[in-house]
Amino acid sequence: MYLHLTDTTSAGERVAHPVRARLNAWIFRALDGYAHRKYQHVKRELFGGLPRTILEIGAGNGANLRYLAPGTHVIAVEPNVHLHASLRAAATRHRVTVDVRAGLAERLPLPDQSVDAVISSLVLCTVTDPARALAEIRRVLRPEGRFWCVEHVAAPEGSRVARVQRLVERPWRWLFEGCETQRDVAGLLREAGFAAVEITPFTLRTAFLPIRSQIAAVAIR
Image: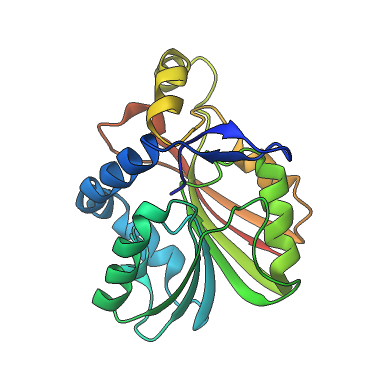
């Protein structure tokens, strides 16, 4: 989950919109139960058995904390400060500890080779520079560390979902945090320099047609 951004810094990174940041925070809190019903089987399998200290990028309102073992410590990078209170409340509710940091995926506030595990969900579709974000993930992972993610992706060309993705691209980007409906996340992962990448495509049965084509992936540094 990532902050909707409209302006840019001198480095080319987006900065928070004063109104839509609050709107996005409300939307993701409102959709939390729905998202859990749709993703719970995938996320329980993907995020089960993680190390006891992990980094989550785009931690949002803490939607993924329910899938972690109690006692897990999460370094949570979330640029939308309007989600931080919900994130901390979710940590308490799910009996994990959280260190909330308002950083960007393209410039993670961690030293080199400092974590064994990184997770994200529905984040690489929204970052300004996904290749740079993946390079940052590789930088902070220790050797043989792993990156687990769930992302929606570009649907097969010519499919009904692909046509819908093109049709709604601009309004979708405006409403959902700068989200790109046709980003080739699988290709980005394969080109990011990881030692190994395992990608499992799946179809999410959801009313949000533009994000039906999805992947679950793990990449090894």
